[in-house]
Length: 258
Image (cartoon, rainbow, N blue to C red):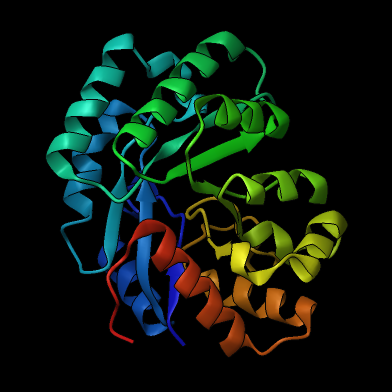
């Protein structure tokens, strides 16, 4: 089986000691391609360097809402320059976070909408963070219009999901779906149309139930696949084939070493 990890932070400091081994384990597990989104402007050079270290690593450049204190107005202009020069396959990680206290919502919206405008201008998909903010994210997407992308670690309802599908967005599911108490998320995974689903790890964060409290890594995508296939009553190979095709279509990924 060939898998795509649609969201992992392989440039994070947690991987500095064994990044090559982490990539090797991912490839051995069938994870042939990984989208690696940024969090702030200062991280873009390291992210670019990490993604040159092995085939199948694709950077996305953006400004994450949880790193709001690090963002400056000029970073949106710099993001435009990076997109023009580096030609990434996506913009992100961007979005809204209404869970963390103290993150100014107006400022979040300013940076989010600025990145959505860039994604539309350059005809790129967006990788979106939407914690406790799915309705606001939907409103921003509608406002800018003519967008496509993925809501990573999707936290919303089935009705919100339907609105996002109608807008051209997919849903990313990862480690949280493997926890037995995640009833709403597991029901969504079981019932949603497979053509709207992407698999992800969000490594080093969001470990699955089998490694609770430990560092996550892309090789664990196989566990996410296993649980989702079980919930749906489908063969793992079928879920792998469809979600890999979804990721390649959304991000215009090259055909891997299938």
